[in-house]
Each structure stands twice: as structure tokens, then as C-alpha cells.
Amino acid sequence: MAGYKARALHNLILISTVLCTNSFLVNNNGNAPAFSRNVMVQQSAADAQVEVDPRTSKPLGSSFLPEETLERAAKGNNIEKLKLAKDGTSAFMDVYEFAAKIRAGELSWEEVEKNDLEHRLKWVGMLHRGKRTPGQFMMRLKVPNGIVNADQMRFYAECVEKYGEEMGVVDITTRQNIQLRGIKIEDAPDVIDGLHARNQTSFQTALDNVRNMVGNPLAGIDEQELVDTREICNALSDLVGLDPVTGTRGNPYWGNLPRKFNIAVSGSRDDFSHTHINDIGLQPCPHATTGEMGFNLVVGGYMSIKRVAESVDSNIWVKADRNSVVTLCEAILRIFRDEGDRKDRQKARLMWLVEKYGVEDYKKAVVAEIESYNRGVVVEDAQPAPKEPFERRDLHGIHKQPQDGKVRVGILVPAGRLSQAECRQVADLADKYSAGEVRLTVEQNIILPNVDESVIAELLAEPVVTGESRLKINPGFIEGNMVSCTGAQFCGLALIETKANAESLVQKLESLVTVDRPIRIHMTGCPNSCGQVQAADIGIMGAPARKLDPETGKNKAVPGCKIFVGGRIGEDAHLSLEPFVQGIALEDGELLPVLVDILKTQFGAVDKK
View (cartoon, rainbow, N blue to C red):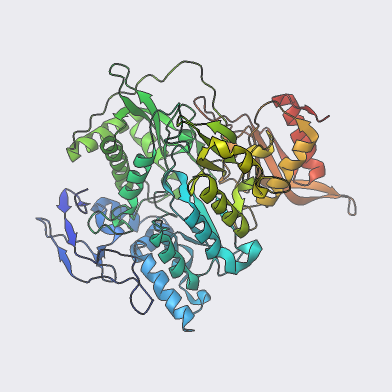
């Protein structure tokens, strides 16, 4: 974009703002970011004017919505109405102001207006966990392609340290991302400033925003790589999160979507990015005639409490260059932003819009949008995917890279949870063995890239990955493939605790049975399926259960689950949509025998000798 674009019917409004060069610099009194107030507004022929937030000198997210979309939003659901009442795209200013007042004793977190506390602060990546930890927030970051460094890992530990070992933890997510637990409003400015100083941000990471860009965790270090996803993920992250006019954090042009939006860019046939469960899934595929590398596009995949949908083939192929991919995604986002459902949030995901159009007509709309940008991007029909046999590879353990004398080392992080000490230990490993670089995976684990072969023995002897340590380089086939959502410890929606239960459960299964291949067990606390149970070999979802009470002789409600079996990932991806069994109590005496039986009958497990 060569500037802000706002469509009010057919009128184009160009906004040019003059700001300081760094929107996240703190002013001299340490309160809120400093901004220039010098604003120029160019009006369309119809003299329509974009509304500008005087605190940021940036347009509101709603300024870019067509009149028809604004009318639907005004009559829409409660979230749409609160976005129109007060725009979320400048909520980072509120954080600094709230924090200053709390520090001065002029405000408490309980006095923050409810819609700010529970909703608008999500534009800063701050999600209040009022049901479990009142006054404390989970802060979600953006980590394009899941690449972090040792300094950032130590900073994460520093951010959560003051909240204690139980509350102050760091989670790796199923989007190759980082979430910080326990953050308080009064501490948030220091965290935000520290992230920005380290070229990271939490802006526009929650509610109705584009989420973290998922890429190939082996980008640049894999002999079977088809596309290096790093530049593309960074470019897409900049598209949605970097102001094109000011070059500052926060892009109001994408600040008022009808719902959240997920993008995954796969770099190999393994599909480590899980494109089939993303709104936009880019699958690398060479052109059948020219051999030029490009992407086939699948669209509409998502999971929610009401519907779980696998992505559909769009019959679109574009070249795997930055311009083509960014333009394609921008076109899809623009149509989604302006035409997506604003009344029913359960129908506000991209799949519903695709189905409303029909796949063929949706493709025509996307192509027309791309052509209107006049960037020379060519859209072709989807190209035939490779048919040669291929087996998805393991990310744990030690594997040679194409670079001479280098290996990658995959390390298990049980349930994706890291303590403060473990964050620092991982940072130390990275500094010592991988030039400070750490890769995150959607399985919630880590990879150390570019490790010298000559130091493998030394790395394997490190205390942090040996003995009683939770972190392991060569875990068992069951414990090494557990994925878990946040669970009831922090999430008010979860029906069961997942992180601790998941870690304990897979260790017990490892002691009971032997399997001859990795078995992916996912655990999620509720039907929203943040733990992606439908994609797992075995998926455990929190659900009601009843058990006989020996004292009363009556069945009583207990924490329970339903179990899904047979999900697949990779080229042959498939979602298991119907429970294999349900109403199982979560306690070991009930759940463990059921899981052992499933492992034996469905996956060939045998009793441990």
C-alpha cells in the first residue's frame, strides 16, 4: 500500500500523516508514547473525511470500512458496536495512560471500563484472565515464522519473574508464538517497550486481528525445502502490523476485521505449518509447465465452538515471490474485512464468506481485487501437487542440515510451557550452540538450528536436556508429541486443566505401552479446540462426564472428556470431526485404560515389557 486506503462506496480517501519516526518511544515522563500532532487529511471528491484519533494522529480502524459495512456493524453484534463506540487500534495509548494512573494511585484495574479491560486491550495483545487470575493478563506476541533469539528468551523470563513461579510462566503456542502469563496493567508499558526494543510487538495480536504468521520451522536449513518462508512471513506480518504511512507499529487499515484471521505458509511437503486449519494456507508447489516455484492456495480452515472446518482448494496458484504472496493475502483480507459477517460472530470467519460466494465466484472476486492493485501479479489455476511418495519428518532429535558440518536439534518442551529458569536455560543453550537463535514449532517445541556437528556430544550432556529435566532431545513417541491448550489454570472457558494433566498423562502412557511411531495426542479444555484435537491421532477435549458416587449411589458430575481419533496432518491432512468415545471421567482410573485400549486397537501399541 502506498498509503492508507479507505473505501466509502467508490470514493478513495488518501491520508498522509506526519509523526515521529518511532511510535513506541516513551516520552520524558515515562507515561505514554510521544506523537506529533501535525496531521494532513486529503479528502475525496465527495469531501468524506477520515476520522483521526488525536492521541496517535492515525485514522481509526473503522475509517477504512465502506459505508455499507459500517451500517452492518452498527446493527451487528456487541463486539462490533463496542468497536464503533471506541476504536481498538489506539488501545496501546490507553495501556500507558492506565498504567501511569495505577502507578500514581489514581486508578485501580477494577476501575478500568469493562469494554476496555475485557475487549479493547486485546488490540495490544493483552487478554484479561479475570475468572482465574483477576487483574492479570496473558500477553500475546507476534513471532513471524516462530524465530526468536536468546536475548528475547531472557527478556520473557524477566517480564514474568515478579509474578512467581506458578503464575509467571511463558507458553509456546500452536502458532509458533509466545504468550507471557501474569502481566499486570501497571507493568505493561515496560514489557511493550522492551519488546519493541528487541524488534518484537504485542500489537494487534488478539480479538479481531490477523494472528501470528506461521511458517516452516526448518526454513533455510532443510535439504527438502521448496520455499524459504522467513521473508514471506515477515512481509505478511509487516502488511498487517506495520503502518505503511508512518512506519510505526500498529496498522489501522486492518484494525477492524469482522473476526480473527489466521495465515500459514508452508515451505515443504511436510506442511509443518498446518495449512489445512488456517484461513489462508499457502502450499508450495512448482508450476507444471515452467517449473517455477509458487503456492497453491487453500482457504477457510478454522476451529471454533460451533464449527470445525478443513480448508478448501481455491484453485489459485501464485508465484512464491514477496510481491505475489503479499498482494494475494492483501486482496483476501480486504474482501474479508469489508464483506465478512458483522452480526453473528460464529459466522464471521472466512469459510462462511467463501461459501456465500461459492468457490468459483470467490476466486473471481479475489482475482479482480488483485488486478485492481495493478502490481503485475499473475494468478493461475492451482497446479498439480507432487505425487511421489513422501513421509512427514520428525522435528525432535538431531538431524543433518544441507550446510556442511551443521545439524538442527529439536527439543521437547512438555505442553509448550516454560518456567522462568527454563527460558534462561534455553537462551544459554542457544548462545552456546546455535548463535543465539531459537525456532518455535506449532507442536509447541523448539529447534536449535546451525549447531556444529563437533559439539553434539557436549550438547547431549547438558543438564537442561538430560536426567530429570523436563526438556528432552530424544523423547518417547508418545510424550514427544503432546500438544495442549492453556487449560483451566488460566482460561475461564476451559472445562478441565490441561497443561499439567497432559504432561503427566503422556508420561504414564509411556510407562504402560510401546508404540513403533510417533503418536500425536492433543488436549484441549473446551470445544473451541485451541489444542486442535480434531487434527490429532488422539484428541482429548474437556467435556461433561458423570461417575457413580459410592456414598450416595447416584451419578455425579465430574471433570471429563470426549476423545477424537484419526486426525491427520501433512499432505494427507484430515480432521476427525466426530468423537470416538465421550463422557469419560478425567481421573487416571477412568481415562488411562481407555487411552491404552485406543493405542492398542487403533495404533498397534503393545504392553511395555
